[in-house]
Length: 112
Length: 115
Image (cartoon, rainbow over all chains, first blue to last red; front, top):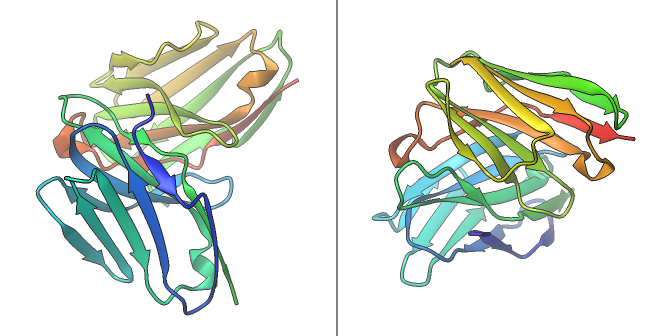
C-alpha cells in the first residue's frame, strides 16, 4: 500500500523564490527521506530525518517532520533553474527489514 | 555519479524476446534492490537482496526473474514481457537492510520498451 503522498503534484516558481513540498504518510516510521530525480535518471538521496527529529538542514534544504500529523515538508530556499526535477519522499516503516516506500513525487519547475 | 551502474541504458524488445538487465555497485554495499518506475505511479519495489539472499519479492510476475551472484552484482532476467511492462527499471543499493542503513544509492536506470 502506498505510504508517502506528496503535495502538490506539480509546482512552478521563478528563480530566487522558495519551494515547499509536503509529504503525508500513514503508518509509524523509523525515518523519512527525500530524494530528487532529474528527468529519466536515477534518484539522488537528499536528506534523511529520523522519527525523533523535528527539523534538519542541508545547504539550501530544510526538512521538517511532524510525527503527530504524519507529515513532512521539504523547503528549497533561493531556488535555481538547476533545481528543476521531481522530488520524492520515502518512508521507512518501523518494521525491521522493510525497504523504502516512495510517494508519487512533486515535479518542480524553476524558470529563470 | 553514485557508484551504481546499469546496463543497458535503453532496451527495446519484443514480447517473445529474452533479455537481461545488469546492475553493478562499487560501494561495498550488501543490499541491492530492483524498482519499477512507470509514468504517474510511485516507484514500485520489485525485489530486495541482502548478502546475496532474496529477502523481498513484491508479488512480481514470474516473467521477471532476479539473480544476485554476489553482493556487487544484480541481474533482472526478462522473458515474454507485456507492453505494460514498459517502464524505467532502477537498481539501488544500500549498506545493509533495515532502518539503520536505509539511504539508498540509485543507478541511472534502464528505459525498457516492450513492443
